[in-house]
Length: 286
Image 1 (cartoon, helix red, strand yellow):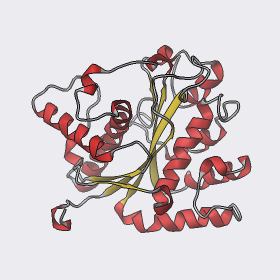
Image 2 (cartoon, helix red, strand yellow):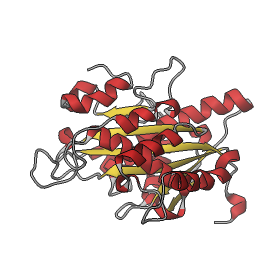
Image 3 (tube, one colour):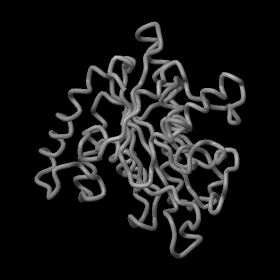
């Protein structure tokens, strides 16, 4: 595609995930299966700060001391370093969004409507949609306030095996078509098309984009807060440290905006008390 055909943008959303989207077998219902949780996050950066992101990550790596790897990967850090990284991220000029899906109630589920879309990864696309609905709402609101017109957001995904980002783009283009015909099935939230253009979608290896490494921090911090199977006991310390940069609505409500729990309503997730803690911290009421 010619660069002349790509529209200008004001924001960049770096997107990464923790856990996996598998639904056939889900722990702890099944002794061997996919993760109980999947978290997907976005780190939103103004275009003017895009050139600073690599410097931010380099400074984080310098501040926490020498590592065997040359990129930032949250799960490989010690608890002390994890906390230090989250404190640093919480001071940056960014906005953070996360969607956390407890998959127990999705075990074996088929979404017939979603399967009609041109994609074999409907659950992943659905998670991305929930995230993008909040990100684009924020971008539309902020750009109108700051510039008087909606300004577009570019999406950069962390490449993972098994995901087709062209399918994700096609899925959202179909949603746009349905919206024109007032045929979107879920209408509580919809993507804000005024700030979206699916020519502004890219996928990159984790190591090659500092912004994706920051998004890994967010997704993994919340995964650590809710998971008690792979990462030990639930530990919300790191996710709580991120609160200064978590997106919120005008009433300073984080729930169902900067922090989204699925399924809804919250009680349907049938969470253990330690899993509820981080959501209570961000305003959920069980």
